[in-house]
Amino acid sequence: MAVPSTPTRGPVGLTGRPARLFSVRVARNRKLTPHMIRVTLRGESLIEFVGDGPDQRIKLLMPRHPSQSLDALHGLTPRQMRELPDAERPVMRTYTIRSHDPSTGEVEIDFALHTPVGPATRWAIDAVPGQPAAFFGSVAAYDPPTDTGWQLVVGDDTALPAVAAILESPSAPATTHAYVSVTDASAELPLTTRVGTTVTWLPRDGGSGSGDDDHGASLVSAVRRASLPAGPGYVWLATEQSVARDIRAHLVHERGMDRERVYFSGYWSRGKAEGE
Image (cartoon, helix red, strand yellow):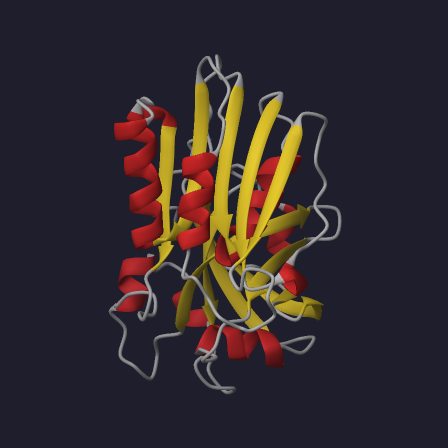
């Protein structure tokens, strides 16, 4: 099938390549843990896809109803897509590409399974081979300065795909300390890490199995207690918005870190869907 040409009018990533729209179809999906599902997308155009960095974000576009075609989206920017009438506008959510295999034209996207189940999560759960989708991207932010001797990587369930990709990145500093907040111990994933990397999992139920959620408080406490190396470091931080702000404020104002070396992002906001 011929891939429609797409004007490159999107945001520019670290590599300087503007983002573009890629048409894809579901190849398969599988549950990684009780709290994470992986959807593999395949498309002819993905052979041409070039990644922007380990934390590369995409705008995933999913049909709002089974009969909706996404063909008309080619040539539009994400802003223009959001302005479409309800009946024509796809479900749009931001995700991180977990991995990309150009030889097969596939990308993998991991979905954190939240409650209540939103439209994007429901799409991932119900995804079947051949189901159409598209994504606009990619744009990355992970960019440690050349003199970085160590890094601190902090994230929660929504950031776990990016955290995993960063820990695998050949550009990562020799010393990495990672703190990951997850629902409970069953959400922990095996991660590929290099010598010099430590990963601390922080189940939000405190390991009690009670289902109680500390809403990120244990992540803030863990970073406050962390013993960080001397010398120039780099921080990559992506969590719920208020948690990200608290941790960044601690690192910059109490630890004295250069704010230019602390990348932070509020991947989501408690009680709100993307775009609200």
